[in-house]
Image: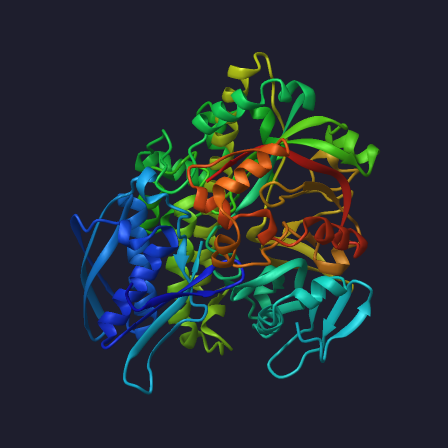
Length: 138
Length: 476
């Protein structure tokens, strides 16, 4: 398992990723997003989708990243399990790898509606590692 | 919840007087147990809402309130555009116009029991539900605009349901002043395959029966009799609404400093009602409301067809359709003065009392039907709006049970298969594409809907009419 976790939120669920770099933390939080729907280990990184977003605010860029993935998941009916993220200032681009939803194999629990600004944080911990998190509306 | 600094004004009304940035009091409706069990985050969020510009009267939390994003779920707040009032995307929620529609079947419980398995199977085939499911409709750009402008009326014009349904839908099925042009391409794209789908999570289509009648006169007025079967549909504006919430939450968070609005937390992102951004959001949100009404109208049509295939000759009439994630312009008397306000209800149901002009004529003498969904396997309720609700909480009531346990905790405690079997042994058939989803929605993960509804009634927010028990539940 990667360095991600869910944290409790009354009705919904929090996604948190950690990493040595900002990019890693964003990628781990994306795994936590997939894990809301299904076990990421069950998602084959069979095909790649390129995504890009730009927001002049690091925390909102994190939200936009997750929301871009939610959009791709919804419109392509795909799940993703590998995230190669690059961040340059207020711009993010990434190659994300996954496969179409297979209801029998993935047993998807719930669709994610959006990433919220609740418990939103992108920061560097005292040990130098990055953390990126927010609550997802499901 | 930490009760320090909270004054118990009456048995079911708790007040936090304004302090710090709060402009108005926060008012919570609960009994001892409900308020004790409410998260401290509800207190924090309702006080944050009370600090927003242009708020009028008070920020309210309903008996089912729980931690939301920005506003608590179960939150009600009204703003005056003329006094710098704001509109908040978080105050409406991602699932814009999520709501409940109840259909009358004219059938008795015994008639359903004879065909229960077959009907459950047919409904599960007819109603697209769950992650990755798609509807049969593909809308061109022009048709999408027509749907976003005309709501359930558009659906009826396209052959989904009948004109007779429309008077029994909030705003007669069509929300005015929608602006399809204020919606992003992403939102349109997300809706492309999702017309006539139920969604997932706590959304459902349920076949229920009237297990208890509390007020026979109003029940009869609503067309409900003991033992009669009802269908309830709980869902919203699907991907379109989710994307509009996403887009405008970001835009409002980015724009807040330019409006000079100090937010205690970014999650309260909002814009002045009179600003261009505020007006664009309101137009987009109203279009999403029309999308939700059209969606529930299409699902109604699919449900009627499925019923007719199993029970030839069955006719399902519409009792009512009311949303619980909205911002609407309403007139309310505050401090003895009638004011035109933008009322946010996030996980709260409008509950106009008897005589209100917005209540369909057929029900006007009883008050508006208030449809309260339970959790899977538990009771639902039909209430009637009470005259006292106007002064208490801008004619608002609860919307459901409210979660008491996280999804993660629920999956640790219950297994989907076991729950389905247990409920079937109690005569309730669950049909869902996802057993994990079933576990996350376990009845035990929710507060007692009975207690929530009892408090809503005793507090004077609404009046209990009937209790509904489930027979079949189609879950996403």
